[in-house]
Structures are given as structure tokens and as C-alpha cells.
Image (cartoon, rainbow, N blue to C red; front, side):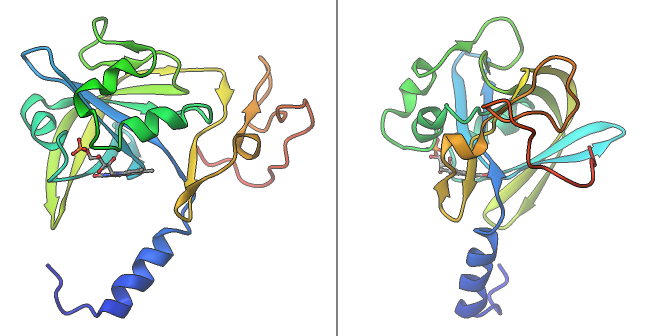
Length: 195
Ligand SMILES: Cc1cc2nc3c(=O)[nH]c(=O)nc-3n(C[C@H](O)[C@H](O)[C@H](O)COP(=O)(O)O)c2cc1C
């Protein structure tokens, strides 16, 4: 696809993408035989507030792709800064069938398995699938959301993970979106609150 694009542009695109600081999530689903499937992903974005919807991009070669297309529901488990190991397990081909042994997964209470101590769990029903070259965009309508009190995402940037201390914030109850950092200092965030 798009074979007219030069190698230079391809490399420049890759480098441009490395400049997006992206929160890592695990996309999870269960097939009818009860098997759990999951994959680490950063191509996850809010799509609209009305209806509540998200978009995830999944490589057609990923083991999750088939189950997701077949079942049509998934959970976006938004990883905590401390959950780097889960990202590694869910992006490595090694011991793929043991992925759900790592971490605190609830595989029974909801339609899709969810990581209990993730920062947030967003349960979706696939509304539309759009193929684009190597990937498929799965647009999901949001059915239910669980959120944790902490705001401390696992962030992937420029081919690596941000250190836990750089990402960790904890919002005390009653504090607005711009709360305190892990040491209780006023958080160094300024500007526009969008979402
Ligand atoms: C930080 C990170 C982010 C990733 N984001 C995506 C993504 O958004 N979409 C995707 O298809 N693969 C993504 N991957 C790659 C998959 O996690 C990886 O290829 C996985 O092993 C594929 O699943 P499989 O081993 O079950 O085939 C990412 C990997 C890492 C480490």
C-alpha cells in the first residue's frame, strides 16, 4: 500500500511517531471457548463523546486480530506506570499463552477480561472495523468504564518507557484534574483542560 512513498519519508514518519508520548494499554477479549486474548497497544484514542467511543489499531498479524473480529467486544486496560512488566508480557511472542498469568486479571465478571489494578478499564462493543494496509481500526462504542483514583500512566516515548517517577501522580479525593505529584507538590501542569 502507498508504494509511491520513499524510504526517507517512511523513516521520517517513524521518527515523527516516536515523538508522540503514548499511554500503554492492554487490549483484551475472550472467545466463545473461554480463551483470553490480549495485546499491548499504544494506538488507542478517544474518538467521540457522543456516542462515547474509542478507536484502536491492531496489526492483522497479531494473535488478537482474529478473536477481536469474531467476538466484537474488547476492554482497553489503561496501564499504570508500575505495570511495565505487563506491557512486556503482552508484546512478546514468548509464552503468549501464559499472558494472563501475569497480573491481577478478572476473567469472569465481565464480557472481556480486565486487569483489576489498571488505571482504567474501558469496555467496548465493536461498532465498525476499517482495514488500512497492515492494520485494522476497531471502532468501539463504550459500554462501561472503571477508573482508579491515580493518574500515573505507563508512557511510551521515543522507543522507551518514561521512568515511573516522571509519570506518577496521585490525585487525592476532591482534587481537580490538575492535582499534586507523588510528593504532594502542586503538579506542574498548566493550560487547557480538554477532556
Ligand atoms: C509499547 C508498545 C505498543 C504497541 N502498540 C501496538 C498497537 O497499537 N497496535 C498493534 O497492532 N501492535 C502494537 N504493539 C505490538 C504488539 O503488542 C506485539 O506485536 C504483540 O506481540 C502482537 O501480538 P501477538 O504476539 O499476540 O501476535 C505494541 C508493542 C509495544 C511494546
